[in-house]
Length: 254
Length: 258
Ligand SMILES: Nc1ncnc2c1ncn2[C@@H]1O[C@H](COP(=O)(O)OP(=O)(O)OP(=O)(O)O)[C@@H](O)[C@H]1O
Ligand SMILES: [Mg+2]
Image (cartoon, rainbow over the protein chains, first blue to last red):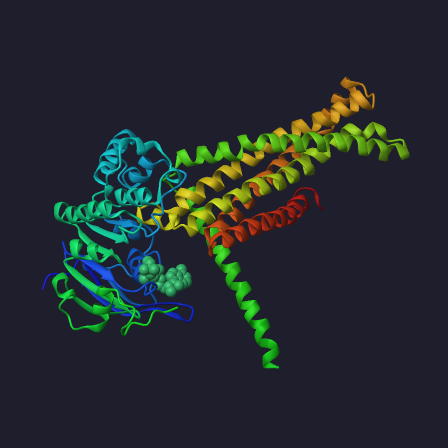
């Protein structure tokens, strides 16, 4: 068996008395595009943050390329994260920097590319997410929510990482732009040979970008299968989610 | 009995935890100030923000304090015919105490609050998390430049404040209290020793460190949206001001106590 690109073993994470992750197990293979679905507040974003070392799990193990990265910090963490691109749910753009510096931040800081080169790479990457050159010199605060999201996406892929995390890449976008972004994600995975782990509530997006779908419920992976199976499964949780029904086994945590 | 002791213990534990966390934060931050790489662009930006843009506030404070000092000591000293000591009093008070302390407090309000608000907002909008995912250490990129700039800036600001404050006293002394200008300048220069100015500048460096460190700490650890950022800002200013006054006493005792 080949080693998985990302391997999550029995991961637990609580905030005080609130148990968010309750033993998550997940293996993601090189070049695979996995989509995590699950209700709001089930810990999808928390799972990504744990993999990135932004939060430390209480128990369990995370392996990237077969190396244990669960509790690393400092320069080891920087090295591990250098190969990972992340799109945050709220875009998390640096509002003190113009758009182009946001996009090429990892290139300037991590790979020490000159600022002129970085700017032209930034403009090129902005083009890929459907943003024109004029946007490059604006500040994030001057952009609409959907544009910020796309700048965040450009920032995540600018350094051509081999693992990319997308936290709700299409929320806040119009359906046409959402489809452009979905295609872009598919293209990134195909062209860069990247491994993608995405979170989305948008079933159109799931069908387009996922090789495999994983459902998170009450802090555990309760279902995992290929994208074709999401309509054929007899798992009542998945069906309820996919069809977007308010009646079913899933009780929304209020 | 146990019911009585439990809250006390919990408070003590909480206090120790907070102190430990702060000490750890301070140690890590200082370590990053001394280790490369340094983000020159960020340091420069903070220098301009903290030093240059604080000049008007600090200058005005110093000028009026020097003037008030001259007026007050004139009316006070006249009671025992010691008006001649005004130049001495102004020079010593401004360089040793008023310059550094007033500048420190003004800058704490201006810069400490701004740092806490900026870093706090970056924390709650996940910009600090984003930094780490872009292989950039937030301590190096955000905190070290601010602490370096603050610690180097304040002595410069205070030196300028000293000059302006003494000049303020001079203006009142010469134009309102009818002292002889040359005589005023001479007694000022005769009074001032290297240590008077130097101790003030040492204070300034310590205050600059305290202001930026508190601002960074509060901002970096803020949570809970706009309200959390507001609390962080208040805490940064209050804590920095109190620490400035306490450390001012300690440094004074170290230099001039016996
Ligand atoms: N830093 C934190 N401190 C305390 N609780 C947290 C923290 N981060 C997340 N949580 C809690 O963990 C739970 C899961 O949060 P998470 O952001 O992962 O949800 P999610 O699955 O991404 O939901 P959504 O689809 O709405 O984005 C939430 O109930 C949240 O309250
Ligand atoms: Mg989320």
